[in-house]
Image (cartoon, rainbow, N blue to C red; front, side, top):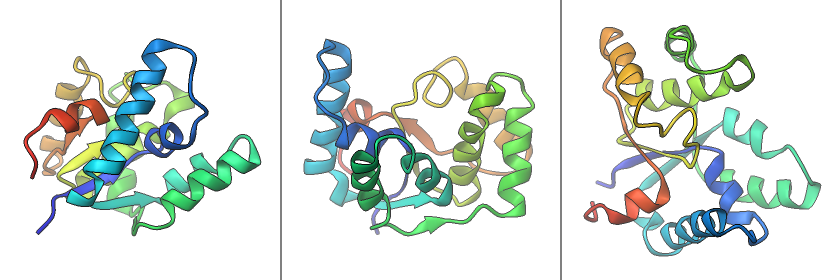
Length: 160
């Protein structure tokens, strides 16, 4: 059975973005495309209505490209359990109000027992300083915590 992976909004965004002139951003785009082309088939991928709502923003053509990626996968449901856990994660005070959906992404992955949460959101989700705090909230609520990684990190892992 393939590992279960929740694909957060930044991944379809990287996959459809115009090539960046910035070296670091370009490397992130290339890592996402390499994961997509060479390793995405190794995972059972899920998205959510939260991801769908986020990818629909911005330029219409790029939004349509992102939506085409997202809608080919099953969606995890935002349940009352997800809402409670997202609130608990948000209440630890490290995710700003304008980024509350990031807590929902974390809660969706935990409540729905994902093995991985793939993201390029290094500020609020894939942040080494914050992961232990998110994991502690999940543990108190009796949820296991997924492996949170970006495309470069997941490519460096042994294949599942």
